[in-house]
Length: 568
Image (cartoon, rainbow, N blue to C red; front, side):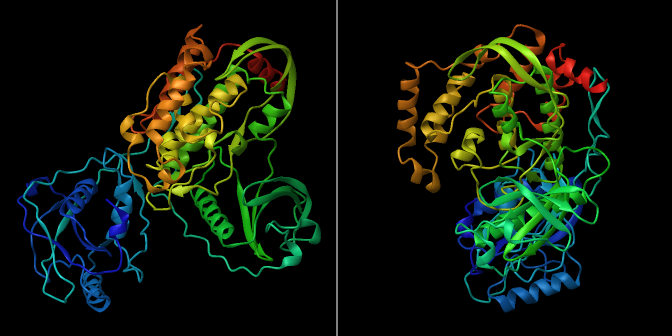
């Protein structure tokens, strides 16, 4: 359904009587409201199908309420009537946004009675309920349009089937080691509102590009003393600081000054607060959020102080690969983090080694001799490498994160780890994080980035060569205004890149991950399932947590030896 049809209220959409099997319906009546223009019959029909609803016929104003009236005064009157009779109101704008990314099983959020929003564009938050199969709507449903006068209109009664909420699994365990891999959050999950910001910028405390100058401030919020800078990203700087009230060290992320960076900071604060509100004593591998405040035109986010990112550790280790046992451990932890995010309806959207941080950088040096194949090269290691004593990690940086059911646009993230459907501007779902995970696992195994930061046609052609599968040509010809700005003749460009790569040496997965034993066979199988072009066919996070390679036991290697050293 095209979002451009949803503008100021101008038309009335209604449904006439439909014959349905009422015995199959369980639930309640709802009123539907929204702002739209030129809404087509098929648009609404598809929407109803995917919501798991059936039209149960025309009713009078005494029992149900108008879909959409003409004019604010007329609309408000009907909505007040619906509220008075305590009939739940569903915002059609929210439904449209939800349906755009609804999965094949018709997943939706449980309808809750909500107050009438003042703004019809308000997105109503509801607890997320996965895996709901939609009911069918028969072919006799008819949708028509009134004009923009205050004419009498037909009313609609939708009976939304009450979803059978699956009881969350108590845990997902490692069958070989008896380890608990994942404990879902309690239901219903909590979602925090967007953080509001009021900025009073002060040029003395910011650089020309808007970054905060920490050296000009002695004490933040009356308790945080800046110690040193830790790094700098696209919209923020990170400082190490000391909480003088507790004596503990923390990390403080400081956003740039400016409207764009204000939104990113507010969005990250909302996500972090939501994560904290739903956390428990079980490890979810997410960075610990402690506090936030505003000062001198900047947002300050106080976080637990961690160590190096996986990216920095690889660099310091001269890009030597991780031991297989530690790749397995890191993968398990990332999957636990992604499962937690997905249970809260959150897409990370920027998963990469730079946003996965170690809790401890302690390591042991081992002799390392091995020939490693990566996408473009063959490297012989005959020296030493650092092996972590403890590969425990945390996921960080939620500046681009979004809630699955809220329209926020498609953000690329980092190109080498960006899923094809995202770079093609087609969709952004939980599956994009799974593709990123596959890229990360290959990088830890080879020490090299799997797909370089290159042009879109080259990126797609290289991904085809590595995975041994082809992207659907229909995707390359799909309409996308944003994408066409970057590459007007995408299909022909990809064909040219494919042809050029035939003369260049690109290693495929069979060469990069040799199937020398059952452990590596399982690893290659997991990689292939994460790097599937069609996001609907890509492995899901809970499937991955049960994958034989994830639940199995890794053969002894430098990583298992380092773990024994740590326990001594």
